[in-house]
Length: 626
Image (cartoon, rainbow, N blue to C red; front, side, top):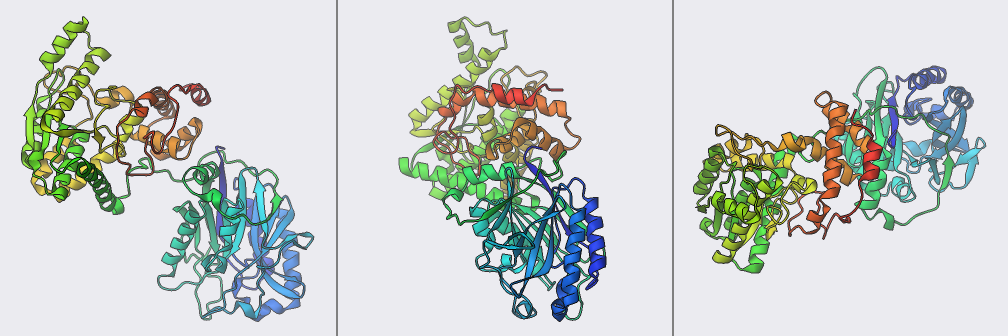
């Protein structure tokens, strides 16, 4: 479903040297994973990694062959990967054995042997890195094997292969592998797991793929070492799932890997296609069990960093915004004034704070900022006061220009009834404000600083040639769900304006274009176009990963749990798609603005799309709302 492949990393309860017991237990675990497409067990799981010289015993070899026969009988549609020592040309190899449909379909030997400090693998095993084009047990054998079913293509590493200077997974990924499975037996030392986890996570990012890791548990010998049974599933630099360690029973870690997402990422955001491709034999797999639901975490606010990183990320965003604007001012002239419309809302507040930082960077007086409040028919006293208080606290040049008379005169000119509060009523106010800012910038020798954020740009929630236009837009790369956090970060840095900023943060989002009622905001943006947290979720997955509408709905249901039902998600996704396609003409004419994250909509940079593209197939794929 939607390109998801369900995988399991299992660290089973181990019976050291008791091959029959291990075989029976592995079979029971295989049979319990009905909906899993690929199940991974640890390195040498049939015997145990710490068998030592017992690996050379002929009875062990015979029991291993019998065990493989028994295990493969338990394997049906799903793929199972187990670890076993196998002989080839009078040499013993540490192998990964791949099974499906009661057959062994391929065997991959370990390339790099750990032979330092507590490890003595070369005492028993040979490296298989030069074995290519061979067969063992009448199936393909070698390090030149990849396994494919439709878009899924996976390769195998065994423990040390990941820790070496040039992991085999690099060449596997270049040849098309999008998932790597690692059978491991990694002992525990203080600090080692943190490094191991980072290694798995980083390798998944380096190959722009997924990495599934399963290691031996505490059933291994405790003569000199302890094993924890680490299980980790990572995708493109993120941990999807991780099992508990030091458990004296089975550890089963399951997650869904998004193969479609990885395909898009490799094509759109990396130089993956330029990597050198080596020759691999591909083993064709039979159809795998389908994923019928989504079993993976989804961040409901993908643009918002986690709490432990929020301060750092907000600092970075603010620095990018202010440095970009400072560079633009330096190009024009240091004495250039910064003209900005201040409404007391979130976006104009963030833009004003960026302007203030630019004055610090360029050692300009704050009075070089001209903050213009332009109250209209829907402006409330609360937002007007917030704008004035913030300007005065910072020390900018503050102007208040009431637009109601000029807009009413304009209504007369075009014969519009001011009692009809339609789109003309609203847009006339937005364009009047922009005209004032542009003319004022000419008068004072300045540039107009835009305030529209990434979410508004995506939805086209701006008046064309009104608030859509500026001479430089510092908020163009910041989504609505993130704006509050950046302002909050500034509030914590500058205590003299903290209270004002917190008031602004806690106010509902509104363009304030319709008349207020009893001094209260009557026009709330999210009542009109839907929750911004949903739209930012749609935007992120639609643009970054090319996710289809039905897939976005499935992911949103997981991310937001019971907050929005499927009907509500579909309703607002339809609106998002319609507005996104219908408003490309605005994006094609958007002013310069700095990119701060991995998603931007500038036609000169990240996003190119014809203004007359038809949204029909996306809406049709989504189906009815309920």
